[in-house]
Image 1: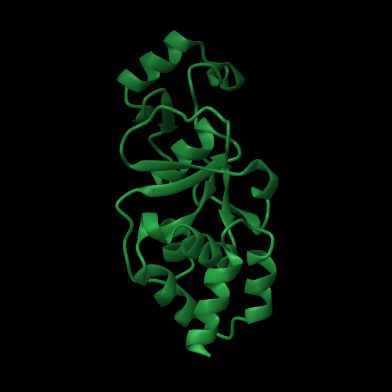
Image 2: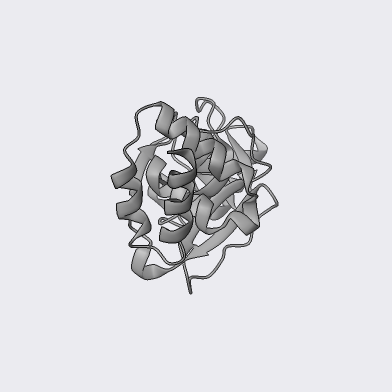
Length: 186
């Protein structure tokens, strides 16, 4: 399993900062993002996931990216949508990651962790139901068709409306739009 290294964590692998840079120049490590390195013999993996979880241990895949991961929509996100608790420092990184700040009080609702293939890392991801509720809550930001399409697919697969309503009742500005959507599709 590959481990993502940063100059400050390289010492755990027995490398000083300068040794990490030399190893990168020699082709033993590759720079996948500013200050993040992976072994060149590491299995193929999603570098954006590695970067997000390396920069923030509480990084959680959300919104369009979570809906796409759960196969609820056909849209391919332009950037990886990552949620972090509101008030946290947003890490500096390239345009491939879109950081979103979610309320600390509700951040853990529907949050799971999945292993990042080819590494020893894990990243948070919101459940299907939480992702649909968030899509309705933030439909002004991500569009109006996406939540509807995801909800239809989720219901077609046997999703239970009470689960959706239960999550929506715990999140701000969610219960009304979810109830209206369920009534319209019902």
